Length: 172
Image (cartoon, rainbow, N blue to C red; front, side, top):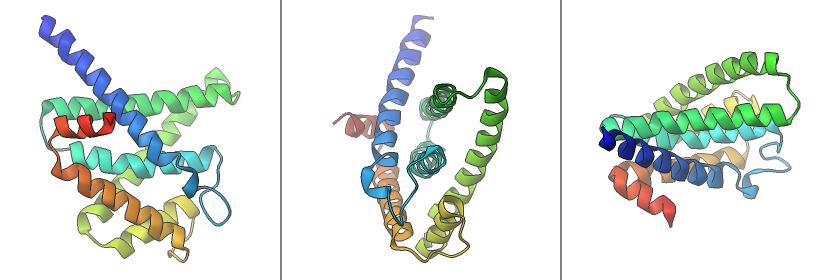
C-alpha cells in the first residue's frame, strides 16, 4: 500500500519536472514577436500544444510508470490552462466549456503533430505548424522551420532515453 503512495509521489514529481521543462521550450522568447508566434493566450496555447507533443510521443508505449507520468503531465497542463483562464477573468461557468474546447483542440494537434513527427517528413510537420499556429495552409515563414527543427531535435533526444534519464536530464 505504501508503495502506491511512493510511486504516486514519484509520478507527481516527474510530471512537475517535465512541465517545467516543457514550459522552458514553449515560452522561449525567441519564438514570440513580429512574424513569429503571437504573445497572447492563443499563441501560448499553441506553443504548449506543440512542445508537449515530443514529451507525450516519447513517453508513449513504454511502461505503466511512463504512461502515468504522461497522464499526470496532461492533467497539470490543463490545470494551468484552467488557472490562466480564471486569472484572465473568465467566469466559473464558462471555464468548463472553454477547457472542453481547448482539450479537443489539444488532442487534434497532438494527433496531427504525432503523425508528422513519426512520418519523418519535416515539410509536412512545418505545414502542420503553419496550419495550427499561424492558420496558414502552407509554411512560408522561417519560424515554422525553426519550430519544426526545435521540436524534432527535442523528440530525437527524448525518444532515445529511458524514462529515468529523461527525468534526470530535465532536472539539470
